[in-house]
Every structure is written in structure tokens, then in C-alpha cells.
Image 1 (cartoon, one colour):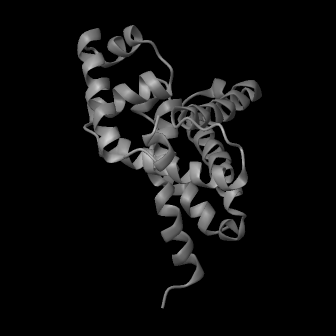
Image 2: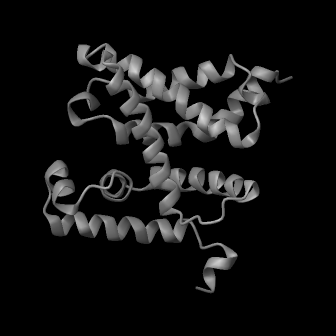
Length: 191
């Protein structure tokens, strides 16, 4: 018979890819090889299981997870960079995690701020993150860097060590695949 801890763990699993995406978007290339984002995600999940996360209002769960994830990511970064102890840098990382989440929301084109719409939007974010995770690595990385991190194609091509044309093709193929995976909502079909 499953207990409360198991139920919370099952509910949290839907956020695993979301947190991993936020971590990938925030780490600079030098730290990506050193910081174990999946370990930070796991620590965040454990912390949520041991807390009263399940009792939070639905709209408060995602911001709470982002805040705990940001703190855990900062702790991990501190192990590799003494300058990360600067409080201004810590605030910036937390702010950047929130900005990445906002870019994800903007990419989903939300203009209705009602609570029910925000709940649907949170579900859409998780669906998008799951769809991104299913893409080939190169397509996922190109989309994350260009659309979610906001980098120009030239910068993405430099980071990925590919031509600008091949990066554009990766983005095109990836977004085409995302549209197939995530069909438009009822109101979006008519536009």
C-alpha cells in the first residue's frame, strides 16, 4: 500500500525534466561538465518529499520547486566556484531560473492571467518540457539555447560548433517535431 511519501514522489516525477531543463539553461559551459544537474534535481525531489510540498496549493508548487532547485543548484556551484558566494550572484541565479521559466511560458503564448489558465499553462509547460526531452539531443540543445535562453543563431552555432545553417535546420526540425507532439489547443486551431 503506497504511503504519502510514495504519492508525493510519483507526483514530483512529472517535474524532473522541467527542473533539468532549467539547470541546463543556467549553467555556463565551464560548469556543465562539473555540476551534476540530475543530482541537483534528485536532491530537490528528496527535499520536496520530506516537506509539506503535497499540501501546497497547485499554483504554488512550481514556484516552490524552482526556488528549492535554485538553492540546491547554488550549493552545488559553490563547490566549484568561490566567487559564487557573492550574494549578488546568488540573487542573479535565482532570478535567471525564474526568467527561464518565464521564457518557457512566453513561448507557450499565454495572455490570460486567471488562476485556472495559469494551472493549464503549468501543465502545458510540463508537456513542452517532456516533448523537448524526447527530441534528439542536438535539436533539443539548439531550441533550448535559441528560444529558451534567448541566444542569437551565431552564438548557438559557436557553442554547438556547427554552422549557422545547420543550427537553423536543427531548430526548424525540432520545432516541427514539437508541433507534431503537441497539437494546438482548440482555440489555437482557428488562428
